[in-house]
Length: 179
Image (cartoon, rainbow, N blue to C red; front, side):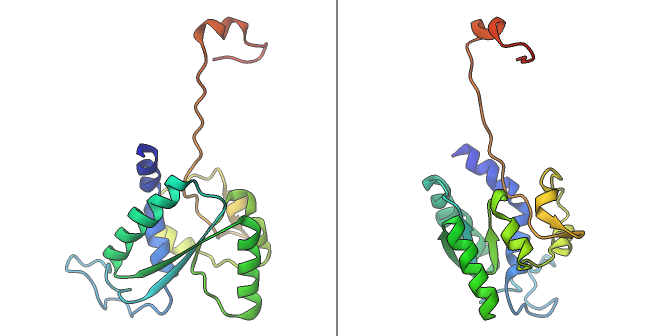
């Protein structure tokens, strides 16, 4: 569960982008919180998020029972969540685009599957909201998350791998490898 909390910390820009995805925002300044923020300017609106890929049960549990409810409470937004297989997500968004009936506001897409969304011209430039959020993003994935100077995706989390080895085996590492 601790790693999920760390992932949640990486989603700082996510809340900004989720709010940016809401349709029909109220004019600037309306519904502002007493601290001057616009935490409630999207109150009463609905947001649909599509997650593609096979999220772990613990990830789905975290999104559905912790992250989404807190986001809904903070912004007064109703969030609808749709979990889709990678191929089904591409098909769904393609159908939304060709029909003109856009249902999905925010997409969580695995890096390896972003190309169809980008080449289909289905994504909007989110450079402004990312810049406005004041966050620093890794540039490691910019070659797959940006096109023609436009930011189309942001990294949400990283897979972290841990290797445990017996120290007694270190002298036997193949040439070129080091601990």
